[in-house]
Length: 169
Image (cartoon, rainbow, N blue to C red; front, side, top):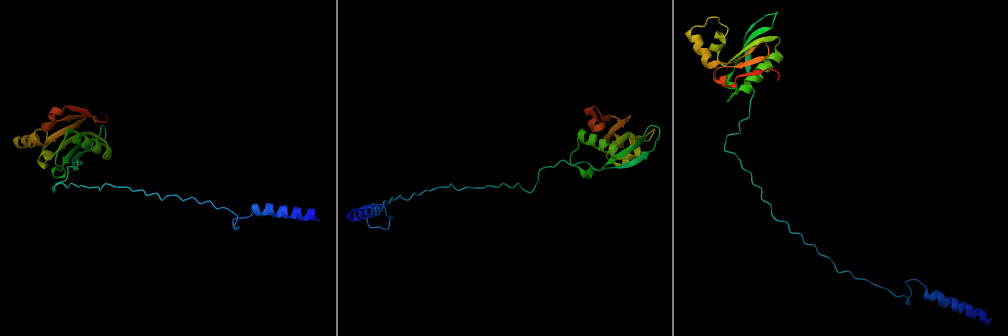
């Protein structure tokens, strides 16, 4: 019977050496990691806003106009007098006049001939066959362009140096 006791004792010793951490015979390994400190420095930011004195930048505006007169011609297309409103723009270029003519042709067809003026006196005088001196004076400074044959724009007066343009090109 002694061999059984010896086997039992040997087994107990083997089990004791493989026991859990709650045994007094077990070893504990502990690792201590030093704390890491990260410091981030952010430079202060400065926001500068510049406000213009009371004037805003000029924004291009489309000149307002109205049809002052329309002569209906079913065979070829109508003749219109386009009267610009000088209060609706601060500057005027040949491109502005081109855009006004193009807009009128698109919105109020059929237009074969158009006359662009910027005063009521010029609007009253532009279709007169034989204008008098006062009418000619009104046209001299206020007759800006005309559309011929439905496609050719001829610049006049202050815009005469711009020559001609083709509508739709």
